[in-house]
Image 1: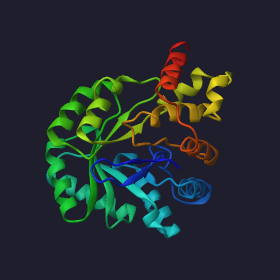
Image 2: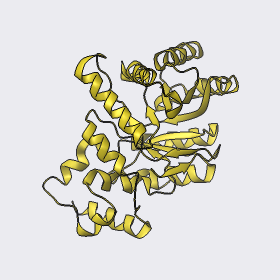
Image 3: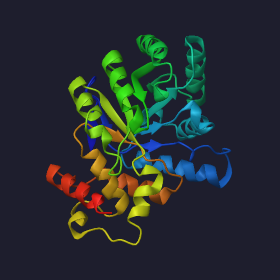
Length: 273
């Protein structure tokens, strides 16, 4: 799988990861658990590593922790989660609980979820980094309406990562946030790559254009390769509960990537739908 450099450390990160919003909030046994285990196994087998979660996602952190621990290969994974509460003490309690649920002595990436109480949590996260309990810090949001606030927080806090919505259907970050991330040396994770399924609905019953088959085998790979071919993007984290979709998503990390001219053609194509 292709990788991108994390600017602050020069560590490489595979371009396709795994989101867990809703789809990993399960009971933790039976067929549902086996499917999630298969998804995580596919991620690792294809060279992926990043799994993103949050306390907001109910049981997802525990499911991720149980699967990773059972596999016995913690070093294969880059575990990212978030702090999503108000106040220093509550934040510390929540982050400690996340580490417990993920069964991780060190969390690879701790992000302030949707900028909630960001001025309080970022100093705590940095202290935990100094103590070796967290490797990287970050900020997240998922709506275009929050981009201005995110940009201010990027200027104020100089995070090592941001996580933001970006897709063919939501390109607002191209105007300010992605260029700022490049300028400041901030790694970029991308959520909502399919706009909660809207992109697939827009191309229902359509075949891939002939020119797209040079780099994509499916609409999912078409959408994901548009994202990861942007020079500011480090990793995209599509969420899924279906192993066959995970396998297809992972395919977007391999082979030819669209160049700038092709990206413009992809965007123009989307604008006709």
